[in-house]
Image 1 (cartoon, rainbow, N blue to C red):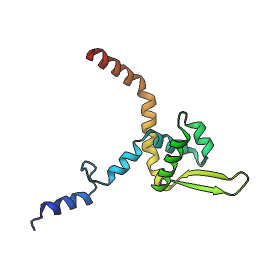
Image 2 (cartoon, rainbow, N blue to C red):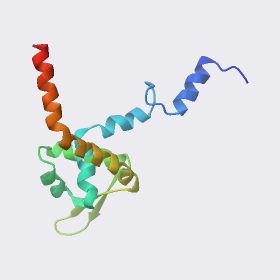
Image 3 (spheres, rainbow, N blue to C red):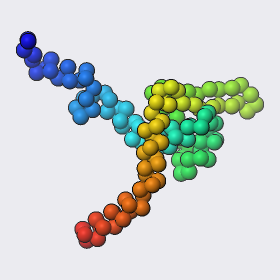
Image 4 (tube, rainbow, N blue to C red):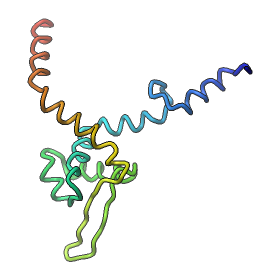
Length: 133
């Protein structure tokens, strides 16, 4: 077996996509999907295509700017499609791509976990804060 240089070992590790490595490109994906608006948009599209206004109403608290940025980013990442239908007014629908659908079970599970365990998290926070005071 040939001896590899440190640079060759680093290159081999980079190609293996180990998210624990600082230079791993998969960290970009982890950063993206850990955003609360991303997870909420993906789960909101679970039932099929939605219009911008439907998403805006469904996801309380998201600003127009954040929703627009999130949708553009998800489209760029290949997780959703944007379909413009010429009409008066113009109709724009957003839908998950097969890649986005493959992420949906994970995102749905995280959302459901958060909803199911928020009381426990709050209790833990209160205990921590009381002990730290």
